[in-house]
Length: 258
Image (cartoon, rainbow, N blue to C red):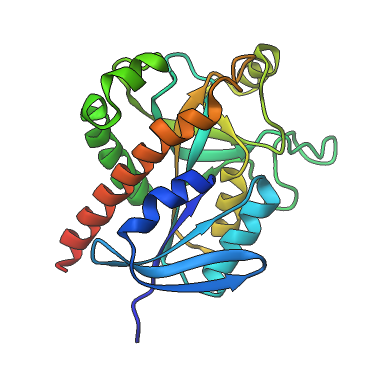
């Protein structure tokens, strides 16, 4: 019986393209308009896919990875806006919990609670998240080597760090300081905001499948959020994704003795 793959889900085309050169024995599979890339990376069976933007797209992708490929774990990579104090452009956030900030069925249910589940926060897998955080720390230690001093200066990146905690998701691009303040007022422990992670988390909880969410901070979720976004994805986020995922897969292969 073939080994169950690890699923690596990218939010952006550039991140997926950064990972594909390391994939061998590639088999393309198309389902529901998504192009899945099945193969081997660093000795591990994997399936790579672009999720699409937003919670529905992420939920559909996660369901297909579990149902069609029987992925043994899912790792989502992408960018996010920083919310927490000290969460800066060029940092990495590893989600420990995820919450849909635009879920509000009150007064029937408490604000943020997913109706009929009794919960608003979905916990990422502890061991998988520790592995992502460890790989991220090793990447941050090499940031100047990996990105180059010029790119770091261009984006104002100095001493990049790894944070772990609450990540918010919603079907709205948060791009004003007022919106960010409102989120932090409602959820003071929130570190970052994005558009997919909590949906993937809910699907994985339904299927009892381990997952992790890894986000590079591209902006501070304010009026500067659009500045050089596409260049940041290419020059910073895609580099982080390639290095962190490769490091994690190498560690996974060593742990399984392959």
